[in-house]
Image 1 (cartoon, one colour):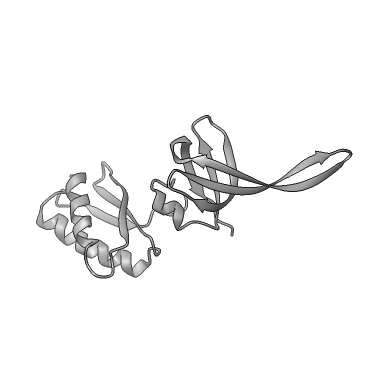
Image 2: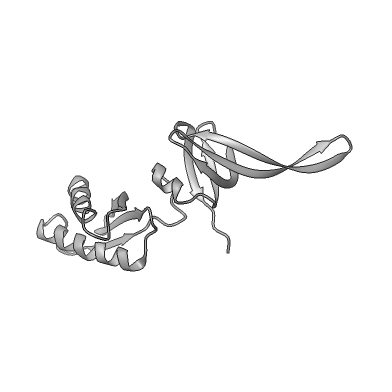
Length: 156
């Protein structure tokens, strides 16, 4: 079923206004709730999500992919879900994020750069210099292959 839904989404993403959209994740619960997470390079608006949801729902029902009684939720992943794709990092440059690497080290900082194989985080750290302490800016590069989980942190 997942492959069919992804194929339907790829059809929708070829339509005008949805060309920069992409599939992130999905789940089907035992209570027949289908949750589909999508994103867009330009940001996902409520209206864009709503239009994609209507298109997808019609395609899923026509193909009879889910039980007669089900609910579908199409939304952006939200800030509590880990980033999965490089293009999600690109749209979050300038935002604060927490990155957990494969060795279990956690780094909290501002995402300043995204390259083909790595990201760069910047954060402040207090260091002792002689008898005084000073604040320095640390830049840390992390290879995509070494990222276990990355979550954008929001300020309220």
